[in-house]
Image 1 (cartoon, rainbow, N blue to C red):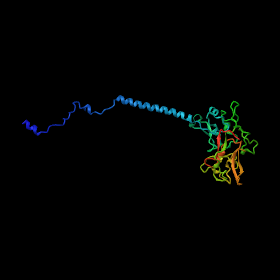
Image 2: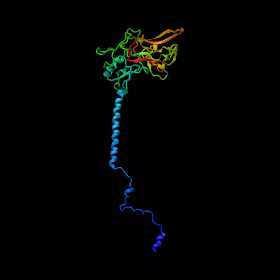
Image 3: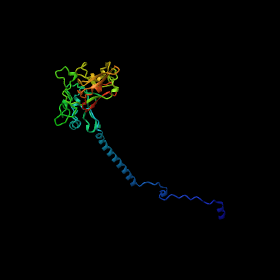
Image 4: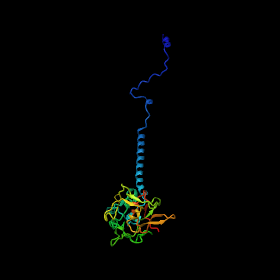
Length: 302
C-alpha cells in the first residue's frame, strides 16, 4: 500500500522553505551589504576637509586677484605725484572728491588692489574743466599727494613740465588768468582721425553726447560760475570743432587747416604743448568711441 502511494505522487524537486529563525531575524544571506559606520564617517570627514581647503584657497586667491589686476593706468587729478609716490602718500580721505565742482574725481574700487580709494578721473564720463578756477583738489589734499610744486627730492619726468603756466580761458580777462600748474597729467591725442567729423569736413548739430549724458561743463557765456549739463547746451556747427572751442586752456589745441592737391580744404585738430590733459576734448567729442582721447601720464612729444 505504501508502494501505491509512492507511485501516485510526483517526486518532490523543490527545496522546502526555510522557516524563520526563532529570534525573528532574517538570515545573513538576505541582508543588504552596508559600509561600516566608521568608513562612512571617514568619507564625510574627508569631503568636509576638501571643501574647507578649497574655500580657504578661494578666499586667498580673491585677495590676490585685485593686486594682480592693479595694473590699469588711471588719469589722476591735477598735481598728482608719480604713481608710486601717489599710492604711498594718498590716505584715501576723499577731500579732493568733495571740492570738485563737476564731480570729475572718483575713488578707485577694490578691483584696483593697492590703488583702492585713490582718486582718478574718467574723462569720457566727466572731465576736469577747471570750474573751480584754482584747482581746489590740490588745496584740499592734506598730504601733498596732489601738489602745485613737487618736493625737490622727487624727480620730474621729461616732457611733463609745461612750457609756461596755463591760461584758463574763463579767466582770460582777469588780472591773474593762469592756473598754478607746472606739470601736465596727460596729453590729448587724435586716436581715430578717420572717425573725426572735422577731418571728414562735417559739421555737428544737437546734443554733443545725447540726451542721456550726465556730464557737466562750464559755459562762460551761460554762467560764469555754475557748470551746466552738456545735454542742455546743444550745438550748431558747420564744421565740428567742439574739442577746440570747449577746451578750457588757451593754446592747448587748435584746428589745423590745409589745402589738398585738388584744392579742397582739409581740417584736423592739432594738440599743442600747452595741453594739460584735462580730458574735456575727450568728453565733448560727439563720436562714439571718441575720436580724441587723453593718454594719462604721457609727456609732451613735439
